[in-house]
Image (cartoon, rainbow, N blue to C red; front, side, top):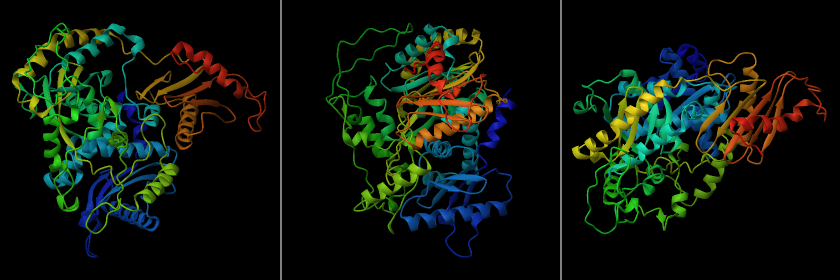
Length: 567
């Protein structure tokens, strides 16, 4: 089955490379010296040099002539999403039939995934061997392409457990496990995963996707007590790794966690987590101000190690402590303008000193960038993917955190914790023992639930994408589509691309001589529907008797039983 799932993935990404222009300055320097990683790895070196040199030269030339960053370069058979940051040049190529928005999202996910586990790209290549980082690029790219259907690739959505096939009390139990762990002052938030699917999560879909990469890697390797980051005292069931988050990513869950440090020093009493997922409520209420906490300020000041080179970051290398982005429980305008890490467009224009030119020309450059990316990469409503200012995407300091994993066979409890959590033996043991019994019980119940096939197809096909939770509901099989599924997948891909590029478009019908697909979207969701059978009249000139015009009514009626309300 896994072999069948992997077949379409090889057609999605045809090329990917990272090129460092700082290593190729003189006329005698070889292009191959600047290639940090190239996929497919078996490509002859001469072809790698040709593609890297041509695309990097064309991209920088167009960028300088137009005074705006290049997002997409189209060739005859492939289209390339382009990202540039200082001397680094990323390019990811896919067949021309893949929607441009999907190609851009895949490259952004890949770059952000690398930064999540390794920190600053420049700093990573200063501290690690190129071969080591090349294997990590290959691992991340393989994960983003493996084990999902074509529809999952189109929407870049999470793989979730089938909630219609399990007892809702099990989902509630998973949520209570996470809430109980948050009673530890050093635990920020987390998620529960089962066999590569999300059971419950407290973090954003983008962060959940990143956490699943390390979860799948540890599951493939199996528990090894001699691995660094694996704790022998817990029998190899607990492991950890360092991750790096931006301030905007932390702001999505840190201010609402229960461990915010108050402004004034108060005597605190250590509470013991209950193993029955209940606890005596505290009689003291503490103000919540996550970004004024000493631990956050200390980590922010220490994170300058993972920022760009001080020689390229301006006159004052010391980072200033940020103001709290939340006031009276409401986000300030500065917090709302914070560039989300997940929509990171790595394109910068720098002057001779390496300082980003966002002064007098900030407004003009920002408008030009929005125009180019709007036509190339599109804009996804409801997913926070509006084109950010490219000069601010990677300049924000990366804050180190720790990803804690507790595995019980196929079930994984993943928590984002403070770095000092690993040195606090009492907290680690408390979180481990408090959740162990509940995790064992949850795993035993989930193991007995059959995975179940996709919903009954019947005389129609549908796909419903939740833009907020980044989840997909469909009755298509996960295996490569047959003759009936391929037209629906292709039509869904085209409609999704049009929805992303045209904000005012709410409903559309796309049809051929043998099939018609109806699509509708709102800020929070997108739905696609195809009815099998029936005669398709007048496949050319629109006619009121055309059966395609009855699809909206049929979609509203038939999808109600799937929990999709289009009224």
